[in-house]
Length: 489
Ligand code: FUL
Image (cartoon, rainbow, N blue to C red; front, side, top):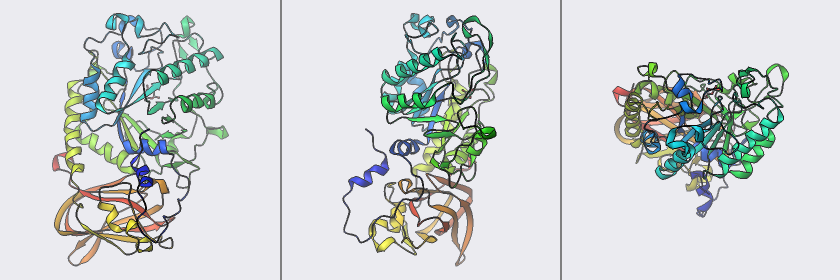
């Protein structure tokens, strides 16, 4: 089992100290959620018959013969994602059209009936292998809505769906994320019936049983949907989380109905709820192009490196995760325009966050928990996310100063709370030392997994973090300073 950075703390023997760690506050993340929140930035790969028929939602009557990428290269796709700084990849193993990218033994509507690799290919295998080889985690999207299947809408389809899920969860190594889409447009081919089939979203899929299958076969995998159970949809496909975006959330149904995928007040996902009943961090899924699937007519509509950076700050920088879609083209390659944009974005991202201008700065705090060095101010800039600065229980407001020794210029501040203790901070502010006095340059609500501020260049020798309001004494694991180059703005 892989341990998140947070678990390491429990492996370090306690140094002689006087203070107990603070009690956790509110609802808390599970180990699998912590591992997932560590990743922050992953790739989404949308690929199916649509990539060849120029559609976004296949009707389900497409012949498998149309699926024939001429130059598919899983290693090349994964390399593009890895070079951009992505840590995982989620593949549409089956989209709404029902076509399977692996040779499922439960279906005829699969890659085995396509000309690709002479019908002997398995794209889930090739991509999951490539991910493992290059150090990315691998996740699966299996559309609950299936416009091809004759039994869709009836109990037999649920058995089929679960059998397919079992194939994906047992034959392809560790799975880090299982993606349950809430979309359902009703009409489809359905084995030739060509009709509209409406299902009761709350009861038809029997989600609890399906979730149990995932827990049994892949206990470390997180499950995504509009309403969890592990991670939630942020509520838009435009590439931003709300400000603030709490990882805590209470899913609400529509019109008093129970919440379920495809039937919830998903717009509330943008901000989450400060006192939400569950730890359900947000995922921002968005495409690098207008569509989720490749369309040649969108080759000139690829997001620019600057736009990707904006999305990064408005998703990862608000404590959510960014799942950025990169649709392979008819060759089975990521298009050159997408690669060029990603490369520039990825290079700037690495250069910016690769240098912490607060490293080596002298950190001092108004209060340190029990004067115990394990909770000292210096824990915020030791480059170790498993350590944190913390105050006495009575101190809900607090301040911490970084003395840089000499003037430095930055335009990005990065803050993190120590997540295993919950979200403790409500309001925060940042000050710069300027002409012999403190001057506030930023303030906000919520820190959580990650909070990035970016603004104009600031040159100063001292920076201060103020916790203005907290529900419990703060536990801050990171306070870093970075400089984003001008071309990234
Ligand atoms: C939606 C789907 O309908 C889109 O086709 C896409 O897969 C997106 C990520 O989720 O619900």
